[in-house]
Length: 485
Image 1 (cartoon, one colour):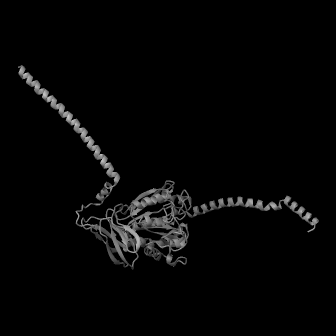
Image 2 (tube, one colour):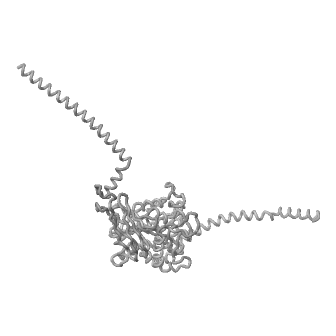
Image 3 (cartoon, rainbow, N blue to C red):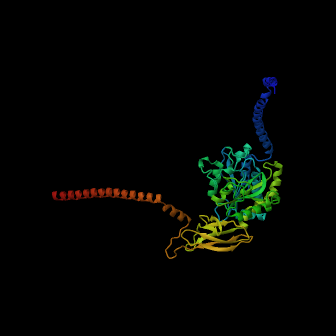
């Protein structure tokens, strides 16, 4: 290029720059960013408005509370209602218990359903109210309803996340995903109690009070029965089986196979999936239930559409009704059940039940010593009962399709030593007495009692002495009087 052409090109560039051609990109970028921010805001508003429109026909939180109380009002003889806590915004977390003896401790398995874990997945709350009312209407009329009410304590929490529902979003009022808020087995997370959400704390406290055998939480966005583990040690997306993988697969297939079309899924074979194989999550409620609560929990995705129109709810209920009933009834119709007693006293023992080859222990109840152990049918199991101070007992069983009762009578390790028989309350008292701080307190109390005794004795001695002196003086006085006379 000649110097003249170079100068011409330079002049042309400067001219175009002065006209703003080279600033168009940066200006356009600024406009796009502003538009994008505005667009996001508009998208959020539009999304909220869309969900608001879809919510037409669904129960509000106020409607839900009224429906729960109305259910109890007409079905009080087989139900009770109670709250396990409150949400961030103070909404009570209402539970319906359905049983022929609600609120009483019995040697029966307990099952819980939880709906609306994610605020934007509201189908579960609607289906659980329908389930409760169906059981009420059909008790003593339908064999399934009668079987469940007479033999199971069924607890139903329609909405774990009422705040998220009213805000039309996945998380709670603090925008926390409640299904990531539980302590995790693989990673140190959610261990700070002060940081845990009130809804999560309520569930954890609930499980400590009631010994649930099994449970299920209802979600939306897919159609599949999900079972543990939900995560892996290396965070990989791969099948990661828990110790009771066979039993969980049986439960998941029971639900899927009873569903109208879940088992026909093209995405999930037989309509079931291992959680970690689908996609790993950490801090989930399902794994925590199994590890810390002794409770076999499934995560049930019951609707491809998270928020289907309300006019589809009846159809979704019909598709899921038999599956829900079968899952609860399986606690009675399958598995191993029994009680454990001492041979010398005949008292119930809160022993532990283990199965050889499965690294998982089930604890019998403290008062009635009943246990309920879910296992897959068609297998042979060696069942063992163990308790400190007693000899371990075991028996081998072959599980068919029906439930099996296996009671144990345990002998003390040293049968020649005299033993005192205690009931459960006495055992708890002995446990308290054996603690070091109680022994120190008892010693101090005895010392104080002894000092008090010494002080009182000294006062009494002084009192007796003065009385004696007065008596002597009186005798001397009377003697003197006689002499004088």
